[in-house]
Length: 222
Image (cartoon, rainbow, N blue to C red; front, side, top):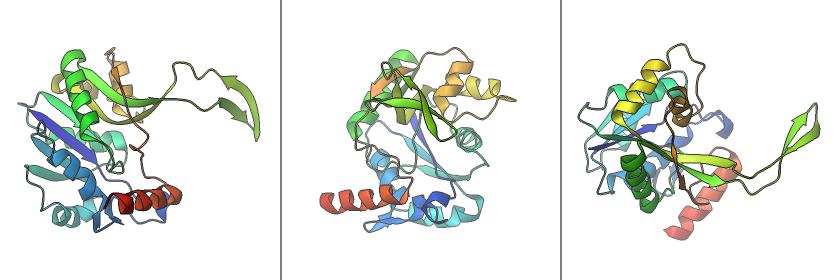
């Protein structure tokens, strides 16, 4: 069984305070578009959406068109705490857990399939894109050293994990500084994570310019 956790508890402060996952993208909230990609995938069994505690009823109302079983649970103060809350709602009969950002509505079914297949083989897998831009350190407003971009990746989602490994990682994460993603938690337990190459459409909608781009893409696809 494959369960999908969608952390959607962010405040959307970089988009003017309105939670970005609740903004309308075309005719529906972005969160619904994201959830529908997984709802349509034949390998996915159920979804857990983790939202702001004050908006759970609103999110429930957004997701009523989903065909597969889903739950809406309250998130925490950080992404790590929100994912952990979602994991507690997942059945222990689950074999694989996918974690996907609510603000990546353009993820493809092909990428989801590759992550599931890679997780089945390796225990953990995550989507990433090779870094192609020149990368430099900056200090006090000026550039310092240039970093070799060889073997550097920009992380995307979904990230997939065997259920038992993810449980182990969260158990051992108590007292550890908050991880920015779940691949970092795998590092704490020494679990290698297989790379699944992403694509340029799987963008996380974060800033106003991202939002304007997403609207243009959606209009062209409609």
